[in-house]
Image (cartoon, rainbow, N blue to C red; front, side, top):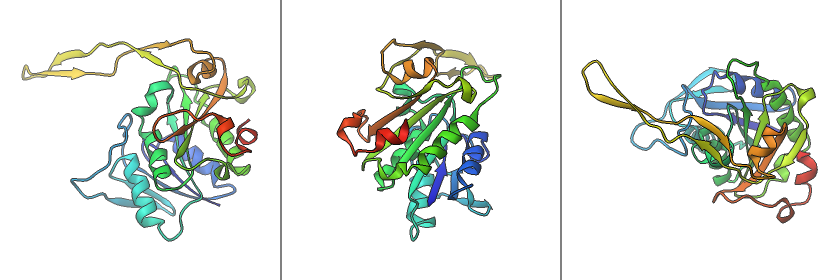
Length: 253
């Protein structure tokens, strides 16, 4: 089985490395990921300048473009004669819950693969404090379990699996839940500052203030210690598992 991995944290990000090494135990893995951090870039693509690939080592490439560019170049050029069976984007450093998926470069890479007819997963580790130990291995092992069960055969066309894993050791993970979309709450604050020449500049992004209490949502399920699995079509709608191919639920749980 051939898997293409990418992310938005950069080709040297720990989550991407652990994911690649875990999947490579049983699969052929090719990585094309941005040459620098591209977090929260959304579904941008590069049109006004060339995209450059740099081979770092066998089957590992850095890309000068956005995460969606990585998939475009991978499927349209590098792997056009031997397409992957699955694209896995991640493991992202931080959550892609609720409306955050619309900003996410990690989810955009998976979405681009689905646009091109390749089954795709976006995977994220929900880290609350970046000083905490980061359990990327738990997320990578779960993705590897899905791959071993043939998850790529059960992801419907024009859909993406968005998976968020609590940053907990394996023994504290309570299980897996199929989720609906929640809503993350951020402050609306935009901070204005001045540079050394007295000109104003701004910091945006806001401060995380929690999530709306929506039973069964991805936000609630992760907060309760469960791995959240969402099946989303390319128009942003959550897909009920009962609507899709038999076998998906048995794969993810």
